[in-house]
Length: 236
Image 1 (tube, rainbow, N blue to C red):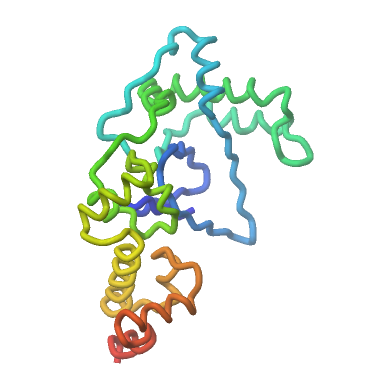
Image 2 (tube, rainbow, N blue to C red):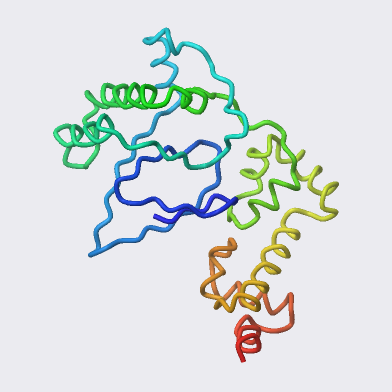
């Protein structure tokens, strides 16, 4: 699975164990061999984590966020405990491939104990219940403009209300968010097509556009030529 988190691309290989963090923007592509792609996903929600802390006093405190560690995906070192845990799930899976409700919290608790025994510093990630704080808008948007998410989501992830986000955005960039996002994405598209010789079909979804024909239309509006013409000139 190829994962893009705004800061770079990561590859999740068969057999990897990964923690996907909350409040992060991530885009991923699955690659399958012989039409087979299997994954095990276990959600550790806030209510469960707080109940776990009550049952385990040694972890019964809210952790400070890990300084400088804001990666969307954290790779966990493979060990015999984790491998045995995955194998142990099979008898508890129902016909829907979901854990039977009676065993779900028991197995989640087992996994959480294994993770903390494997790396105690993961407590800073797992037991961080804070919401995003107000952060530098220019840095965040230049990192994440490629993601096709709502302005409400951008506002939340930068620690702002929607009205505060719009106001701060205007002060920072001198234009409305929708206008800036469209121009920024199209400029990036032009660069990738002209300089990296990529086709429009290779870039439009990567840059937050849902429809290829709409992308081509707004591209021509912006630059006066179609993506195909830019590509043909670049490689010709």
